[in-house]
Length: 133
Image 1 (spheres, rainbow, N blue to C red):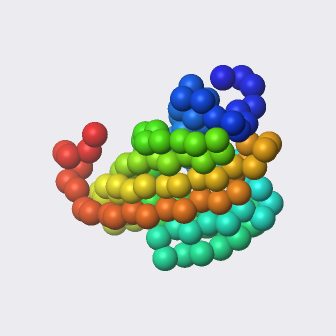
Image 2 (cartoon, rainbow, N blue to C red):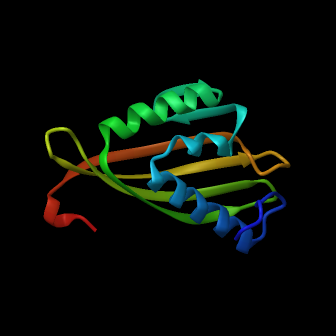
């Protein structure tokens, strides 16, 4: 979709929002942070932080650690201004060991389609390179 995706969501626009987030995450570019409000609130596992600057710092740290990052997101459900997704991604660490991460995210958006809140839970486990999807 070439137009900005804003609430209220439909099945089509919620799915487009999820696939857009998947593409953006796989780009591993700082522009990802522009999808969030300037005071967006995040929970990522056990980390809690607020604001675009904190999001940029978090993503930079994450992408330095998680080399070879490849993200897949799936729409689980949506309401007027909220979307929940399941996700999976694979990555290798600096030692060349591969990992798979599974989890869920719950997103809340403002009227302009920017994410106000992101709540994420995930689990990591080691995989062999031959087990990669």
